Length: 382
Ligand SMILES: Cc1cc2nc3c(=O)[nH]c(=O)nc-3n(C[C@H](O)[C@H](O)[C@H](O)COP(=O)(O)OP(=O)(O)OC[C@H]3O[C@@H](n4cnc5c(N)ncnc54)[C@H](O)[C@@H]3O)c2cc1C
Image (cartoon, rainbow, N blue to C red; front, side, top):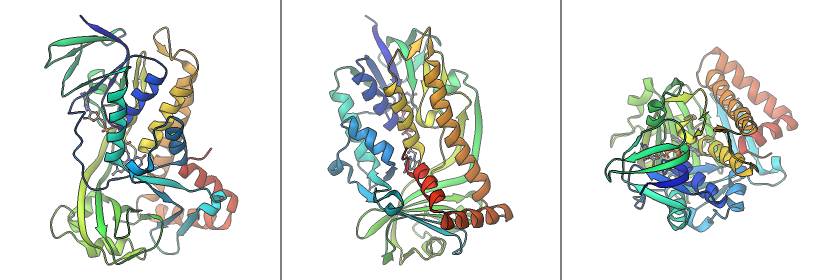
């Protein structure tokens, strides 16, 4: 017999799991489909995910926060360096009257935690290690599960199948191709000395983040322009650590024992619209945000939060509620504009980037009100 669901969520990453849990709390029935194995997450080294205060509050409200499991550490200081040491801006929790600026957690532990919640949730059926076929493009959706030769029916679809979404292609969603001409390398390194807090450093070779991990190590997200990838040589045993250290000067010294956790080419597509009739795209399937500012998952949480806050029917006459679309559209445009502005104004070491970085740092360092307002946006405080 074909089982029927209110929602089918495609993709069991962070966003698919979170959306499923939130919808289940509203008493919807959900089928969560993951292409790979859902049960086993191979534990790797600490892979940092920076969370804003908004996200942390939402997770806590939904009882999805466990400091111990996520190995979380608080951020109380954030330093941004734009090309040279004249352009340094430092934010501390004092700028927010003592409130922390956010937390860093381990991505894999967090994903395991969310998946475990999904597995135990009676409203959520998990189907994993499966390829699917959408037999109908409109609601009710008929979905064939290829390997088991079975099918399910669903009133609504939430697509969270990650960057360069295959489902979006199958559904002919309009999208814009986007290439930052950079690849992000996620590394853990040991050090001799490091200044406290988190750092975001813009140089002509790339955009780098230093994130606290433990007493001996930090995580480094190095989003390197394609032209300089060979210079850093992160994928070889002879990674150019001296070059990395000079880019991060003066914040960290004596880098050694680098471990490359993963690399992520920053070529992707961005959907023009993230919803169509009874279909919602969330997370990376809708847009892959540049790791600068660590906004990708935090923005997805903001969208799920709006869906959660929505008090009436989510879909009316086979269309997602218009006020919900409007609210998320406004937030999405703000985030995308901020990312696009940053990438055009600050991500290249040209005259414009030098002028904007000097203007940005001077303005930040001279106006407490502006500092506070920018910081609130950066760390997601309303
Ligand atoms: C280097 C880097 C650093 C980042 N740091 C931060 C940060 O500090 N803070 C932050 O907020 N964000 C950060 N992000 C962004 C964040 O990682 C993403 O926003 C988030 O992981 C996206 O989750 P997702 O569930 O949308 O996609 P994914 O994690 O890609 O999950 C997609 C899932 O769908 C499954 N799937 C794929 N195709 C199918 C299919 N056909 N059927 C079923 N399942 C399918 C996949 O197997 C996968 O499990 C960072 C990103 C990068 C690249």
